[in-house]
Image 1 (cartoon, rainbow, N blue to C red):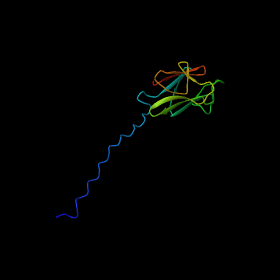
Image 2: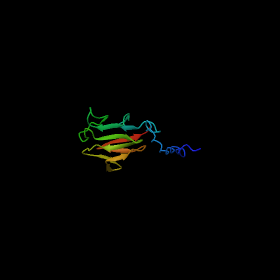
Image 3: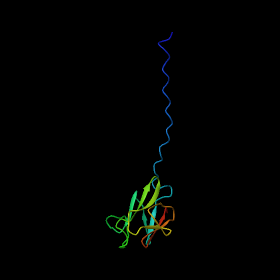
Image 4: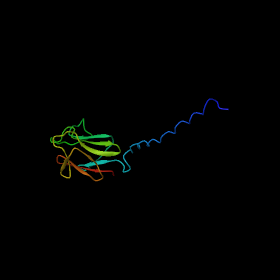
Length: 122
């Protein structure tokens, strides 16, 4: 005997959602990114590391009147490090070309005015 019709269909199976993006690695698999400047090593320990002339407002201070107070920033975003010009007067150069924003790769050299910054994951 029928009890008033067919049983309701089973609920649809959940669609397999794309996996969530992986959590950003602490400092990628390379280790900590470091800036080598003037014979010293400066580890990048935060997501926004400021390079500039201002002692209070910079994580790496370059004492040069041609360097802006907040000249450039090393930004960690979506698992990669970038160097970002923060609207400085004299810019950031990579291979002789002024850049606004660029991914930082192992061994890259950037110039902030006449100051060379080398980046390494070791």
